[in-house]
Amino acid sequence: MSQRTRTEVARLVDHTLLKPEATAADVAALCEEARSLGVLAVCVSPNMLPVRGEGLVVATVCGFPSGKHTSAVKAAEATLAARAGADEVDMVIDVGAALAGDYDAVRDDIATVRAAIPSPTVLKVIVESAALPDEALVAVCRAAEAASADFVKTSTGFHPSGGASVHAVEIMHATVGGRLGIKASGGIRSTEAALALLDAGATRLGLSGTAAVLAGLAE
Image (cartoon, rainbow, N blue to C red; front, side, top):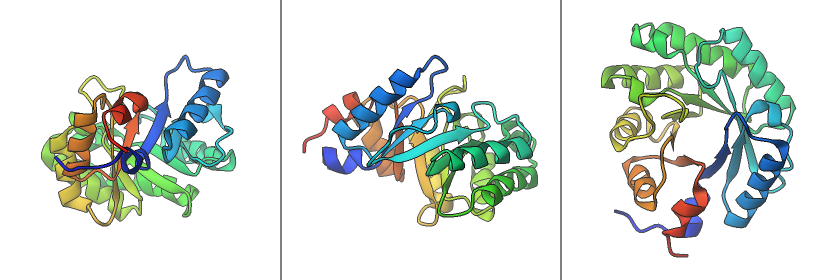
């Protein structure tokens, strides 16, 4: 396992609060903790925007958590989020379309959101990797690249099939690594798990228990 400092890992973290019961006070506390931990970004639900995220990248989600929204709704949600101060948007694909092998539909869904929030707004594509067989994961990553996404992301953290895995990140890295970012998210609760995912090719981590993960690292 590679040696990484606490500071290095912190700068790869989206400090995340997407619980339905989150309040404005919780989000304010999240941002304060994010600054104290030295992380790159916070990720919050869209109705929590705008946030007092000075010094932080602000991310949000769209089509969350099911992905079973029309592309027009996802695009509108992403547009509103960007107008409200989101620097990055993490959209959920239609997992059913991917499982049915309709990768053109997956690509077009992503492309619609991309058109709504052009660069420099960063678009991350949540693929629910634990719900996909390997061949579908490869195809979905290729669809995200074809639609000009910036990142592929493992998981919402809400799907019963599970969250991030080293195996999924390795596949994602082999498919689009070096061209798209790879965000590992969902169920990452230990320093060892975070480091293993980074070693597998992740370039960003979505964490809700950030302090505990970083506590296991030296400066």
